[in-house]
Amino acid sequence: MRTLSAFVSGTLFGLGLTVSQMINPAKVLGFLDLLGDWDPSLAFVMVGAIGVMSMGYVLRRRMEHPLAATGFQVPTRKDLDRSLIIGAMLFGVGWGLVGFCPGPALAALSSARIEPVVFVLAMLGGMGLHGFMAGGGPARIVHQQPG
Image (cartoon, rainbow, N blue to C red; front, top):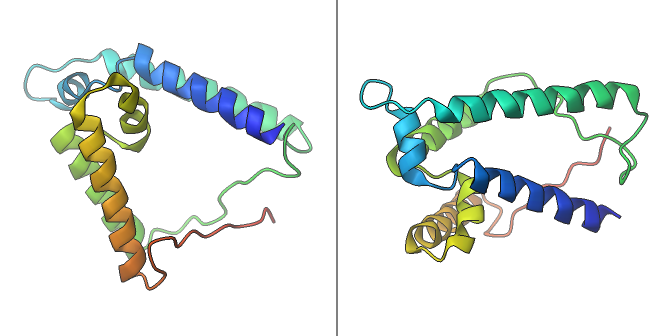
């Protein structure tokens, strides 16, 4: 059930990114260009996503546990540390430079264009480099069990 749920969710997410043109770097860069030829259409995508997510939070409060898991995995940390701030800044700069972020880049792999391939390879390289710098090697993945 978990695998089917993940597959359906991922497919729906990728379809939403494609339909909203979030996999088109030119569209994203047009949205980020506030002082130039600004394209506000992706703001509607964000508002729609916030609406869907807020319904998810309401449902979560009414459910004892998810349908395909034993518990909800909700972040508990609320502090802002150096790593989070630097990571957020790098993410924003990267998104603003190339118009891709991880989810849309993965969805854009289906477009048979070279740009998302280059981005995803660079992203994987950066993840591997971070793993080595953090002392855990390239396959350092931390799994947290729900509290």
